[in-house]
Length: 603
Image (cartoon, rainbow, N blue to C red; front, side):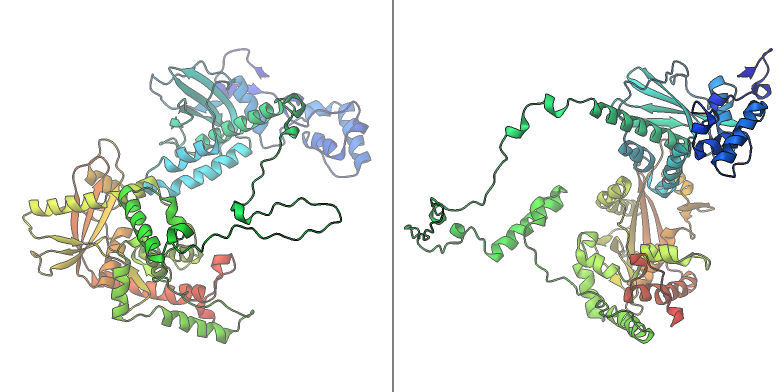
């Protein structure tokens, strides 16, 4: 209830809780003696009384409180003010943080009945919170997703209203913030008829794009509603006795297919054994491959290669690729054999450390052969095999900027690809756009008056002098106009916002910086570290860094030169991390199986 003799401001209203507003504040049984110990303790906790002692002492204490009228005088909210906030929301006296919405978004007419709302599942939440954001924000959406679920489970979602208007479904919810308990955030969601979240808004600092903890908790509450509704509908189905007699339907019998000549028709008699009769039909021996239904190995391999080319051209998965036998000529042996006996001694570990370093050390001829065999890059198994034990250019930034106080476990998992690689739609679009970006790069060079530019595809390069480093550039460039004609090509495809230029998007994402001469690559960005390691591994002096954006016809191109000063500070960190953390993990896997990491400094 609320005292409202006049019409004061919301902050001046006094809200009084009753026993019905607090769970457990009311005696659930007819007499105190019939209550359990848990119920008695909860009742006393709602009055701020002691909850120690046996059942008899607790019952006596409860009766004394009721007898002297202390049960109403000392009634309080034992759950940190949560029930007081709920009542304030019901009375409409709690300060609400609502955002200024467009006139097309209705503010009134919402009802608590969710009938007619499309089905909301976990897939709906995932697609909106994770897949609906651009590539750079992928990691930032995981935290609101997890915290939003905890908000929902903790009871922060106080109210959900529903309105169907103009073919769209509108949701209005009120969610408590994580820290402040004197106000409530109001969230608005727009859902299409197919169950897809079109837009969301929240006034909280993190709700600019509608993907905050409060929106996520609202979606989880809707998902739980549909789960419970599905359970109740399944219970209401007809019983098995109301359905057709399924027990008289014979099961489907499936046996092996056998030629008639090999079938033996025998009528069995009890206690009489009968000799097996040989079939009278003796067919001639089959010698033709078509009769035997067996294809020669060469024909199978040709069929496999034809399907492989079709799969690449059509960009569609072919099931026969997983059924037909494949040649394993390029299959490499494991880096090191598994440990046969446990526990292993320190001397044996040292020997395994040295063996790992020897096994990744190749001569120039082998390095050249690996580069030729891996020119299809991620589409070949060898590319993944030779990347696994090495620090690649894409992982250079993570190791180079690591602090001494940071645990190396997650970086080790990332370098060795223990976790299944995540590929978003934006990343897939970037792979598909490589040929278009190369064509735009050549056109840009022609407009600048540079003729004879040649771009060649390449595979995985291994450093000739430091075999633990590797790189996979997007191409090798021959520029006859340059002093050093041979260089590298690095391609990127970024997501842009509407009415935004490519340069503005690059500066906003931190990839580039505004300088006197225009926009240039940020030397503190991971792309700069990637290009520097690639040039060191391939032994080239420059890289053409080319970027295109979504819905943009312009192309950004900058020639990045190798910086010896930058590499002198980066290389020791890479070498130290490899020797102290990667080598022990390759020799004796611990992080892979959730065990404490092994440090080579201990030996």
